[in-house]
Amino acid sequence: MSERTIIVTAPGRLAIAEEEPAPLADGQFRVATLFSGVSAGTELSYVKGTNPALHHGFDPVLGLFGGPVEQPFPVTRLGYMEVGRVEQSRTPAVAEGAVVAMTYGHRTGYTGDPLRDRVVPLPADLDPMLGIYVAHMGPICANGLLHAAADLHGTAVRSLGDGVAGRRVAVTGAGVVGLLTALFARAHGAASVIVLDPTPQRRAVAAALGLATLDPEDGDPAVTLKTAWRHTADDRGADIVFQCRGQASALQLALRLLRPQGTVIDLAFYQGGADEVRLGEEFHHNGLGLRCAQIGRVPRGLAPTWDRERLSAATIDLLRADGDLIRKHLVSAVVPFDEAPQFLDDLAARRRQELQAVLAC
Image (tube, rainbow, N blue to C red; front, side):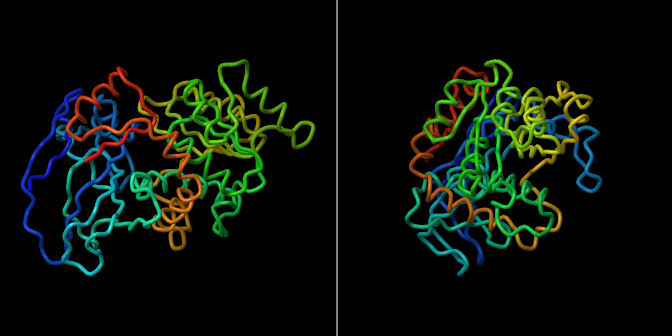
């Protein structure tokens, strides 16, 4: 059978490409996609043409952006939240019939190699649609907690709860990353968790998940939070803030919410920079910390014990505990694969808004 793949041929132009897969070789397996989750931030930046990687080359050795990109389009791999069923296997490492979570992009099928691809078998008691979070998105959020733990304990981290247990946690942004991160913090023993987002619909989803919310446009949320969260008379605010909204104003707010010498763990993607961040104010006078938590790396020194497999296992634990609520309140649209180009274009143009969209094959 032919394999269909969603590609971006130019900004605002999407298509479905078809190709015949090569015959299965020894050591490979063939998976048929069941569900593919849409990442509204990263994916739509390619559709809109705002992703920095489309305009500036990246040197992985120096870790620097600069220089032209040889051929930014077409973008042929869009998406990283896939669930599929193994239809054929010529490797004992992957069983036929298994339902697995992977990161191979929006396509109806994929030829995998366990020496090259991450393959996470999903337990039979887990809703397969929730599996979209297991290979990548859930580990992104769990890695945020791991960075909070490393900020407090260095390499002596034993649990994802080491950075949040018994502490007051604020989360800026009630998108998928923010809500999953807040649920992780609650599950791992945070004394208080509050989610801040200016969108009433997203605050309503957070509330439906049992999370406290605050409207950042209703007065000064930093004053509200610091009045409520007292450590000593002149030490007030959040112990840790997870910044999960890709806007500079949200990072500025996250800094203002912190108690003195607190830390922002930043999981956001600032496509246009962060010009509104004022490092001469609270950041300087309160001695604050800012750590970028990206799934490409765990905190320094923790890679031997906290690989992505362990973060996926922690995601499965969270989905087992809160999966019914996540399925009911986060997944806001299930779209047939053939309708994906128009759907993604509508999302990018803001003709349609969804919290978590899923493409169904």
